[in-house]
Amino acid sequence: MSRRQYRAARAAAPPLPSFEVLDQTHRQMLEMLAQLTQLVDRLQASDIDDSARLLANEICQFFDDTAQAHHAAEEQLVFPRLLAGDDAELVRHVQRLQQDHGWLEEDWLELGPHLRAVGEGQGWYDIDVLRSAVTVFADLYREHIALEETIVYPASRRIG
Image (cartoon, rainbow, N blue to C red; front, side):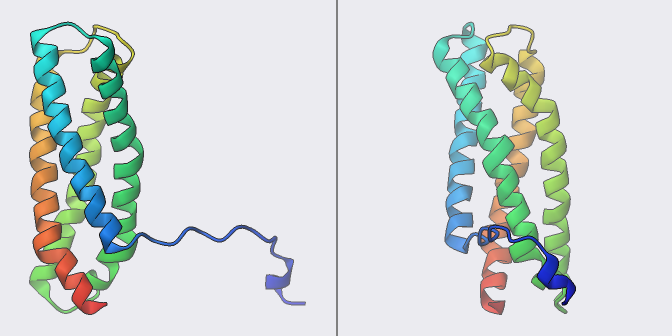
């Protein structure tokens, strides 16, 4: 008997998302970033209310789950074939996107606890830190998405 016959049966891994799904997630990200900016504006003007708590929790769940899964899918589906190619400029773009993923994670580690505090109705968050962190996070995400959609995704689609 081969070693393979001794392996326990398990459920199949879910398929990697298509480019349409990745594009849709980008649209959701841009909407979440807009809502995040609006939330900070609301918090600047007034105290935490139920709608602010709900929105903060929705944003946290999105960036904790959906955005993380999206980045992992890009790392598996899109980036490897482009990094293996001979187009040096394209390789630099992909390396930049990989670096962005790390920076976005670092930014979220700073931003997330403040948003979770809002979601829990706690007033210890710092509005100035929150506003600054949201600006940095949103600007990087928008640049990141633009690079993916204008250069990297089209190149990956061509490769097939």
